[in-house]
Length: 59
Image 1 (cartoon, one colour):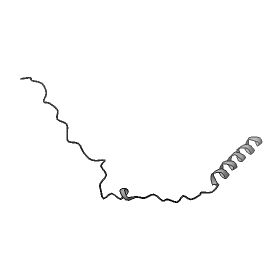
Image 2: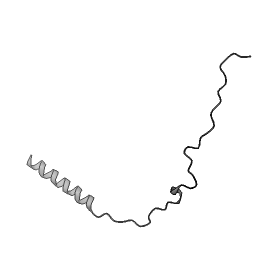
Image 3: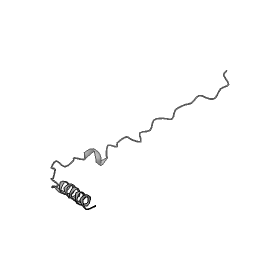
Image 4: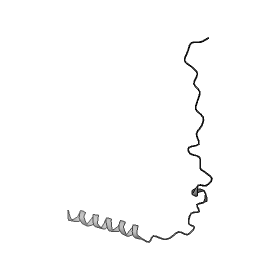
């Protein structure tokens, strides 16, 4: 007989990431209608550049 260390036996697999059948995420339906958010981004972007250019001219 061989006098080495005992052989390793891997533990059983775990289903930690398995989704349960009664999970509310399985029946989730995303909204079908999208809403416009307006031009807030572009107005803010242009106002920022305008402020930057005015400050650059002054200093």
